Length: 247
Image (cartoon, rainbow, N blue to C red; front, side):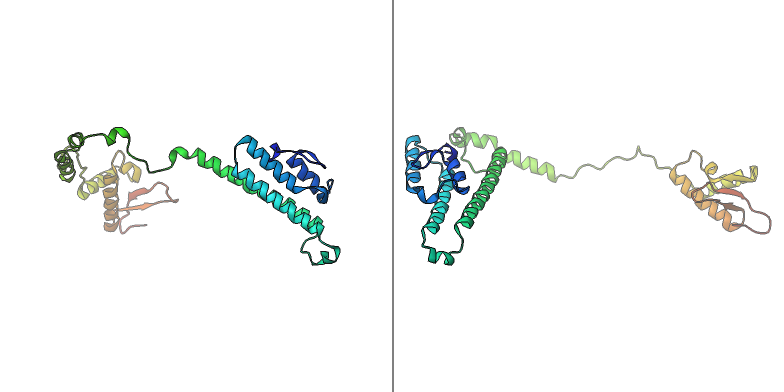
């Protein structure tokens, strides 16, 4: 039961319980004239009439009644003892309002967590007994499903080494350094200069690498020289002049 649904019929007030709290906090109703025992009896009569006990609403009601009793007890103390009070009545009313707001925040957080828990209800793991049809299953039926021989065959298939792959249909490109040297010499004999891209046109990566080694051999022997005017630019290869090489 929500507290706003509690209707009160008292000497100083007639209406819902939440309105009574608001009037008390605004000091429009004198708390000394309010009989809190009648409020508690009205709440008990309401519970008896509905036949339902909401622990959350009951806890909230007890907290509010206890706070009102604390404020009223401070108001009823003699004036000479008022200085010894930790909180004056107005400050106690503010404390009650702060407690109510804090309780409302916690109640909202609890409702949010309850909603998240309900949303994840189908994904929680829980222990449950076996279905009735499985509990009545005979051992003969279980043995027919889980045959030890079938399990052994499955494990044996996992432990068996697979056959070796036949890679004879895969051809590996083979190129020799001598063939690439002959190719470069033929190009330089036909033309005074040639680019590296022209030397490896249509070749694979392995041939390009061997061609680079062949070019280094020609440079070391003084047969060819090259230059590259910019980073990652084309490599110009030319026949070396008689008497030496140039970088």
